[in-house]
Amino acid sequence: MIAKVPKFTLFYIHGIPVKIDITVLIVPLILYGLPAAAGLEPDLAFIVAATLGLLFSLLLHELGHALTGRTFGLPVKQVVLGGLIGYAQLGRGQASRGKTLAILAAGPATNLLLFLLVWIIHATPPLSQFGKVDFSDSSRWLANSVEFVAYCNLILFVVNILPVLPLDGGRILTVLLRYGLPELATAILVAVSGLLTSGAVVILNPGYGFILTLFGIWLFWVNLRLLLQIMSTRLRKRA
Ligand SMILES: [Zn+2]
Image 1 (tube, protein in one colour):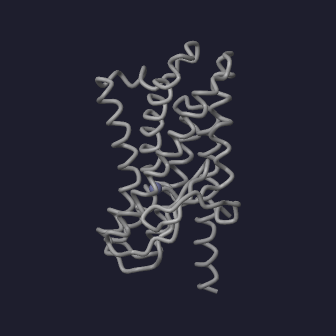
Image 2 (cartoon, rainbow, N blue to C red; image 1 turned 120 degrees about the vertical axis):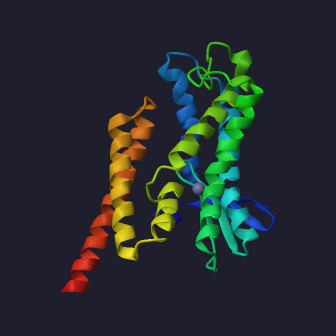
């Protein structure tokens, strides 16, 4: 489904095509809506800077996967940046479980590093205050953008390591379970973990509003379909 979204090539990094799909338009739209929701004028400089900052963060995340994969000798086909989901498409090759784990962890790790970098430079302020945008002072647009993007990187890190497919955390859980379990049991457990975790995200939504709720619902739907698919193939095999 994601592969069908129209996209175009932005540039090449080390021969890897970096593409962008049209869903990225969601990013400036959400940034436009943030001050409006607080009853304030949208700040164009903030929207542009924060959009670029978020796309840069997504690019680093996907390059983390892509370049780690390439280090282990896997061919990298493309990196795609989208508004809701991005991915690094690696070609088929032999990578051990340990190397696969490293490739998967490299994406979220770049987001954590980016967050820590800005947070430490800002003398580690309390997280409840860090990243809160002061829309009433438009001269602060650059500081607002940097802190906001850094805070988003913390969210990107946390969301991506959730044990839910198709996120990195779900894939990491799959690889880890395969150390001791057969393929079918692993697939079922990972889908169940996806249902429970995405269900918890929807119910316990920690105040990030409808975007996280919608994302949680979408993840729940994806994992429900996965589980039903596993069950129906199993029943067909039995018949
Ligand atoms: Zn990733």
